[in-house]
Image 1: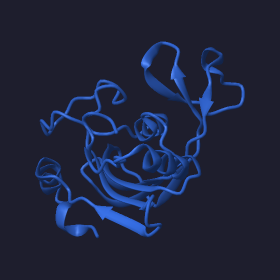
Image 2: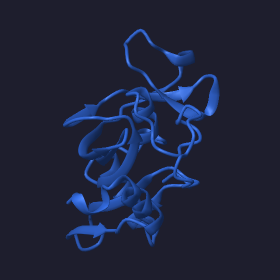
Image 3: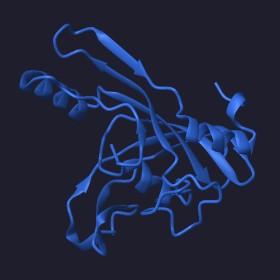
Length: 180
């Protein structure tokens, strides 16, 4: 998870558990849900399935490869799929629920930038846009994690409430109490 993203992180307690969880991630069996606030108004649901590669101009960034002809520096590409669901829009921002089953570095941030709706407060993928709320970080929160326990085999779901700093931004937009 990126440094300025809040919420859940899955950590293995031993090597065997790590190997099993890594296998679940690779097979797309771990479900991860995020809440995000992006620039611009969006409607409905979208699935962004652009492969990602390291940006040849900035190795700290990933870039979405949107066409077969686009090969950033001949770099390796990783398949990635990001499902976006609009929860609310207000004052030129959209509050999203985002589901991913892949976990490519900066996947959500790179996909949103490629789609023209970068995260509020994202210093790397936000296109230099100002932060009108003084948040000081990107508005991205890992709120839900679903996986099979590596020892017991039981399905596990863990949730994390929205942090207060992000909640205050939604309050200012009149969004906070009007989403599921």
